[in-house]
Image (tube, rainbow, N blue to C red; front, side, top):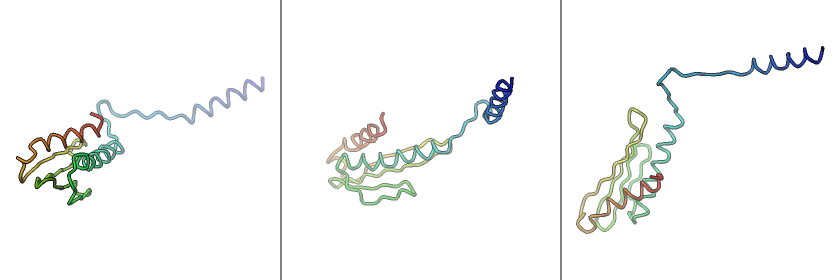
Length: 117
């Protein structure tokens, strides 16, 4: 009898320590995931430049701006966190783009590959 009471008491104490949190329907925010998106996107953009031989001239992670050159072609990347928490990465080229018109596409594909797409 004492053994049954002890077992029930232990189970009550253990169950009392369990907590279940439920979010409002249709609403979910995960701050660490937002950080991880930017934290994955920035090095992927830097790596895409390196993959394609673009020499990085300016790198400012805090503003999301990256600039480099290759064969007199300026390549820029802007990495921005949008209002909905997603990350937008935009690549642009300027200068003598006729020297390598596919450079921007290769940079973009390198970025996608690094992001697992």
